[in-house]
Structure formats: C-alpha cells, structure tokens
Length: 119
Image 1: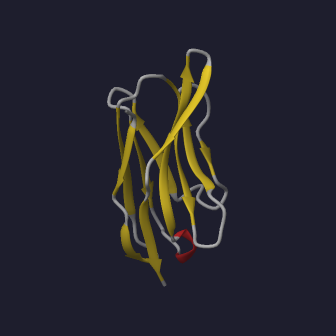
Image 2: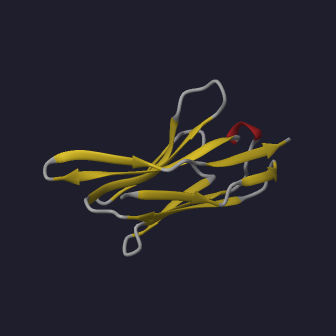
Image 3: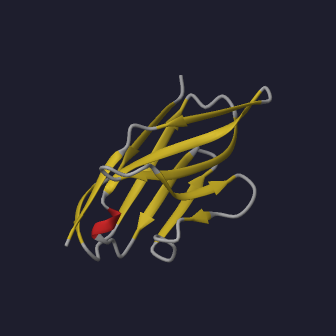
C-alpha cells in the first residue's frame, strides 16, 4: 500500500521559513515526478513545485525564488524549503507522487500538512 506522509507544517510569521518533508512507503512503480500542491480555503488545489525524474523543476510563479524543492531518490522522499513566507502562502500542502506501472499512469497523494503564515 502506497503511503505519503507530510510533516513540517505549522504557524509562522510573515518573512519566516518552514521546511516540509514527505516520506513515502510502498512505492511499487517507476516515479515520473514528485511534487507539492496546496489548497487554500475556497480555492482550487494548485501546483507549488514539482521535480521530475528527468527534466526541469517547475515552480509556481508565486513561489519562484522563495521556495526550493528537493528529492532524495534513494529514499523516495521530497522536501520543500519555504523562505520569505507570506500570508498568501497559507494553505494545506499536499505531497504528490506520480509515475507509470505496466504502462498505466498512477498517482498518489498525502493527506497534507497545514501551513499558516500570520501577518
């Protein structure tokens, strides 16, 4: 059973930093990409950052230059270093892993970790 468990969220003042981590287990497929998404109340889930197994790292325009995504390939973990946090970064942050298994696309989500940035 694939499990993704996020950690590292919390309450921080504007301008502060947090580091999110996502631990995975039960990965049985070839990973194409690992990423972080966020969803604020009343808004749609949006991509924050994604790191592919091959290719270029993607960042949302709103976080580029402030957030850094990294991945430990051996451990199948992904992290998100968030600096210069703003109140608009407040959201539930979810880890995502996507890949291929027997020519079929698969993806899995974690339950999320709450990030709250106070002004």
